[in-house]
Amino acid sequence: MLSFKERKQIRAEHYFRFEFGWKQRSCSACNGSGYYDSSAHPLCGACEGTGKEKYKPEHHRGYPLAQRSS
Ligand SMILES: [Zn+2]
Image (cartoon, rainbow, N blue to C red; front, side):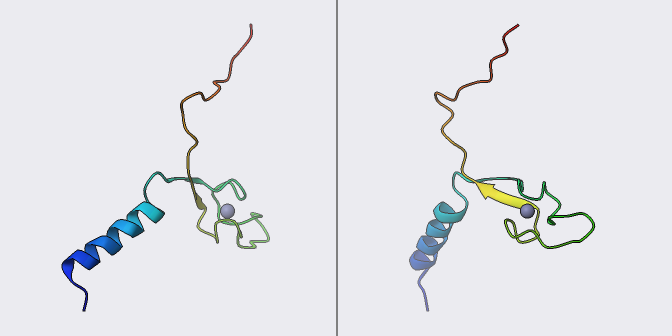
C-alpha cells in the first residue's frame, strides 16, 4: 500500500519522464497515417500505428530562422 506521498512522487516522475517538455506531432515516417503505405497497410514501426510521435523540441534560443533572400 503506497502512501499518498509515494503515489504523488510516482506521478511526478512519470510526468517529467513522459510529458514534460515533450510535444506530439504527426509521425514523420508515415506522415500521420499510422501506415507506411496507404494500400499495403503495414503498420508504421516508428509510431506503432498511432500516427503520432513524441519529440522533444530543440531549444528555441538561437534557432536559425529560415531566411529568404530576395
Ligand atoms: Zn508512423
